[in-house]
Amino acid sequence: MTKKQGIIYVPRTEAKFVIPEVVCRGKTPTYELSEEMSPPMNMKQLGRYNGEQRKVGNPYPASADEVRAIMSVVANRKGSQAEKVRDFIRKNIWANTATVVGYAPLGEIDEVIRDYGAPDQFSLRESIVGPDRFIESADSGLSEAILGEGNINVINSIAQKMYGTNFYIWRLNSKPLFQKTKGVVRFGANSGRRGLGCDGDPRGKCPAFRVLREE
Image (cartoon, rainbow, N blue to C red; front, side, top):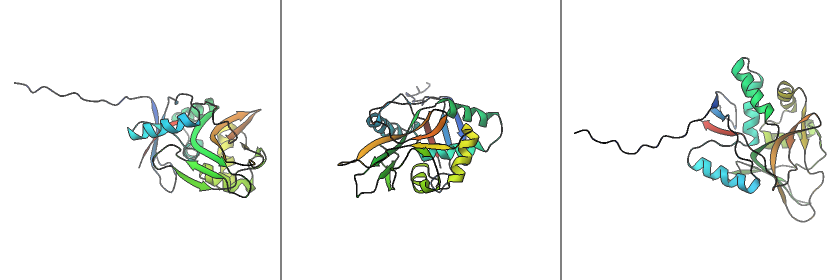
């Protein structure tokens, strides 16, 4: 008598780009970049979604430093597959990340939260407030905290290869008066500029790039 096979769970498969040797957070893991973006979500929804997807091993919203690390690889790699990844990133003009900026009141240092909503989310302290502008050497600290790379020449080299322009940053131009203001970090575009939107309303909804990291 043949033994009946029990119920088997087969994880959902989807189109993805497999990108090896991505230098990120002191390691060189392989990243899977899903070809399907997350649903449009505000900051609160994004944090909840991030925690839930990580728990079950599904692709999760990438933090800004992870997206930058993937860009670093594909911006410098030749071939049709690398070009497909570049096109995919370029066409998703406004994309949330799982990085959140907390603007602190006068006398306090701003906060950058990576992996927002994940069980192991963590924070870095760095001054973020300043003028909207093309990123420059004075922004190296915030670039390191948000993008995981403090060398502005490297950041602009990536941006030139991806978008044909230097990297721009939109952010709060002055400190909040009384209490911390939080917002999701978004990759975005405006008036021919491409870069980071760090001044977003936490209620604003955008999709996010979804990734899996394989150590």
